[in-house]
Image 1 (tube, rainbow, N blue to C red):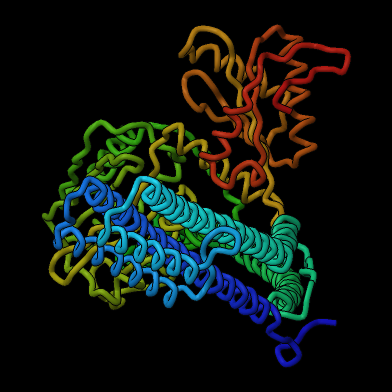
Image 2: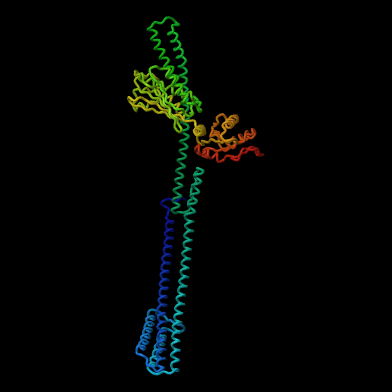
Length: 630
């Protein structure tokens, strides 16, 4: 039965409060016991101090009595001062004993001796000594006085020993009580820890294990509800949350299935549209070609003499036909790019050389403008030279079309850490911000039909954007009224890191939507470090033993990688096959593998995982070619 907020009790909080109350009571009791022990120890110490004073007075009384009686026996008179000291000592001793008896209403002494008996014996001793001081005693009468004084001294010493023994007994009893209290407190503490561990830690541990299982498997795992308390409330709420998440996942899966169906339908419609446009373009191209050729025959007079007015009309028709054919070709190119039917042959190439060729060709086509190129030597760029040539041709023709006569068209190229920026700038009338936002949309004319340079079909910049995006670059426009227009696009530098990232990106796009799995095989041949010839030989050899769609990438001068769309079993089979052909060819190569996304969700992590698994060159065993990394 799942606990609900209404039925759940706060037993855990009550248990914790009870445990805290018990510990508090034990602490208070221990504190009171400690105070009582300290009070008793202080009382015993004071009794001992007071009784030490009695011992001192008793010793002084005995010495004073013996000295006074001795002097009297020798025939000398006892001075009044000495007798006064004797009497004062006796009085103080009796007074202290009386106070001791009132302060401590208990029998003191050994055997049957009490404080009252000690006082009576002191009275008798005082009377006998006083009587001897007033008469002339004999030695026989003096001996009992001395013996009585010694007995009194021994009695006081015995009482002192008894008091000390009682104090020690009190300390021992208090220590035992303190040890017992400490034991009870320790037992209560250990019991509280055990109860806390059982009532809180164990349920929390089970909850954590269930959550970890859910996170690892992605399936609904209910947390066990151990008790009808706060932890049970948390577990129940978590279970309801997990059920809600599972319901949302089911709905999301249904939405994904529906979106996939819609995407398939959209792809089908897009293909129909592309096929329709391609068909229309092809169908238009044939009659347009016939019209254009017929106009050329008429204009050249092959079919008869043509007057000047007729020639002028034919020239206008020829120009219109040429523009219409160019528009049809641009629409066809844009359709092929958007549908992916036009494959780009991207590879590292010399952009500097291409820009110089484009600049020379543009300058040869115009005598009313000056085309300049500001370009330092650039690193190799990852591009399709023919497609980038078309982009530059579109940009330059567009810049010339809208530039004032006699103005300068400037081409600039700058290299950055990862990209090369190429700009084409003119000094025309410029565009507003709203016009710039619509600049790269197809079939858009930003000027009136009769404005200078408005005779284009509005497809050139849209085509340029498609080509640059297919090159993993960007294109943008900067303009202002009266400031001209600058079109800037970027192309990636053909560095090893970019080529590897591009290969991983392409494999991820080709992989299944749900798994996005693709494999990486890292190969590091043995031999002199930094040997491009060895890597080239290895790549040429392995291309004959891999699939056509596998991507080969040079990581550095000592290693290369193969990126292939595959799963774990396929990656293992591929690695075993490569180990076999390498071993048969006698090529010592270290091999490491990694699988996306299990071993890493970024190209850098995948490469790091493959490097950590680089194994020794494959050797043949009874189980076949088995590298250590698989």
